[in-house]
Amino acid sequence: MRAPRAAAWLIAALTLATLSPAAAVRPPDASEVASDPVIEDVRLEGVRLGRREVLAQRLDLRGPLDEAQVEDARLRLLATGLFEQVQARLEKGSARGRVVVVFDCVERTTTSLDAFHLGVARPSGPWLGAEISDLDPLGLGVTGELGLVSSGEQTAVQMGLGVRDALGLGAALKLRLRFIDGEEPMVGPRGQQIDGAPVDQVFLPYTRAGGELAGTYGLLDALSLHASLQAEWVDAEVPGGATQLDPDGAVRPFRFHVEDGAWLLGVVALGLQYDTRDDPAFPARGLRASVVTRVGVSPDAFVSGLAGFEHYVALPFGHVLRWDAKAGAVLGDAPFFERFFIGDLHPYIPPRALGLNFARRRGPNLVDGTIVEQRYERLAGRVGAEYRIPLGGGPRTETYGVEFFVGGALLSLGSPGALREVDFVDRRPFPLDVAIDFGLRAETEIGVMGLSVGNLLLLVDP
Image 1 (cartoon, rainbow, N blue to C red):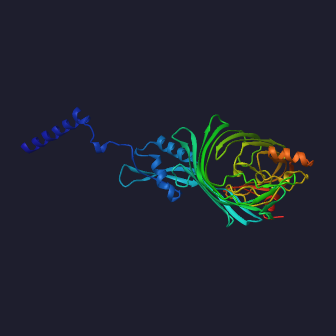
Image 2: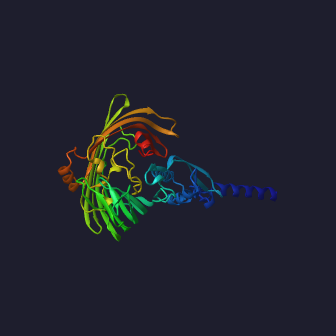
Image 3: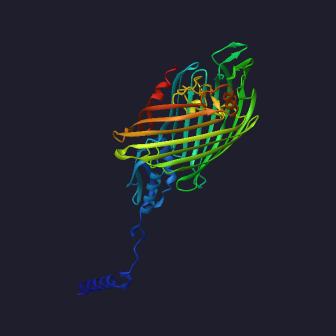
C-alpha cells in the first residue's frame, strides 16, 4: 500500500509545481529571445574593382539591420551618378543572426570623350589628340581628366582632378596641371621676313608649365559662379631679325606679343553663367548666358572680358532654332595665347587644341574684308544662328539621338591700333567674314560626336 500512495503524492506535487504562478512567469533564456539580424558585410555586384571596396566603405552600413538605412544607402549610390540601376537584397551570413547586404548595380558609362583633335595644316603636318574625363574613376568622389595632343614638333599635356562637393559646401573644385612645348607658326599681316628674306612663317619656340585651381558654386537653380586662379612659368625664344609687312606697306619688327626669356604668368578669372536649357547635349528650349573677366599679370598687366548668349526655340515637328552671340575685348599687352584667335571663331580654321595652334592658316575672307590679315587680336565678335532637325536615335546602349544641322555666322576680329591703321590706308570693309556650316551631330554614351563641312576642312590645307 505504501508504494501506490507514494506515487500518488509525487504526481500531485509535480502537478502543483507545473501550475504554480512562479513557473508560469519564468523569464526565457537570452538565447530564446528573437533579435534583429546583424549586418556582417556589404557587397557591391556589377561594380568595377577599383571602385568596389571604396564605395562599400563609404556606405558605412553596420550594426543591426535597418531597412530604412539600407534604402538610404541605395539612394546614395544612385546619387553618385555612377549607376543606371541599384537594387538591394540580403544573403545569409557566416552564422545564425548575421546577414550580408548585397547591392546589384548596373554601371553607367562615366568616361566621356570631351574633345577629339585631328587635322592637317602647313607647316605642322598632321596632328592628333584627345581629351577624356571620368565622373569618378576610383569611386572616391574625385573626377579625373586627361588630355594629350601632338604633331611631333608641338605637344601639350593636361591632367586634372576635381571634387563635386568640396568640404560639404556644395562647391565643385578642380585642379589642372598643364605642360605645353610649342612652336607657334607666326605670320604678319601682309607677309614676314627673317634677315630681309621672305619666309612662309616665323617660328616662335616657347614652353608653358603650370596649373589652375578652378571652382564652381551654384547661387540659384540656374545661376552659377565660376572662379579660377592660374599660375604658369613661360619661357619663349623670340627669333632675332624677324620683320613683318604691315597693311600700309611698311616693314616693321615682328610683333610676337610675348616677352623673350623666362617669366611668370598669373591670371585670376571670375564669371557668371545662367543656364535654363532643358538638355545639355540637344537642348530644345531655354537659354544660356555667361560673362567672364580675366585679370592677368605677366611682364605687363592685362584685362580681358568675354560675354556669350545662346537661345533655343522649339519649333513644330521637333525642329529647333538656335541663335547666339558673343563679344570680347582685351585691354593691355596680353601674351598672344591670352588673345582671341581666328580659329576659335571660324569653323573653317583649326581651333587651338589644349592651348596649341598648329596652322598658319588665315580666315577665308569670303566678303573680301581685312579679316584675312587678323590672327591673334584684342577684339572679337560673332553673331550666328543654327537650324536643327532631329533624325531619331538607336538603342539606348548605343546612340541617344542624331540630328542634322545647318548654321551660319557673321564674325569679326581685330585690334584697335590695327583698325585705325587699316582704315587710313585701306578702304576695304571692316574686318568681317561669314561662315556656313552643316552636318550631322550624334549623342552617344561617351559624348557628342559631329561631322560637318568645318570638320572636313580641318583635314585639308588649301
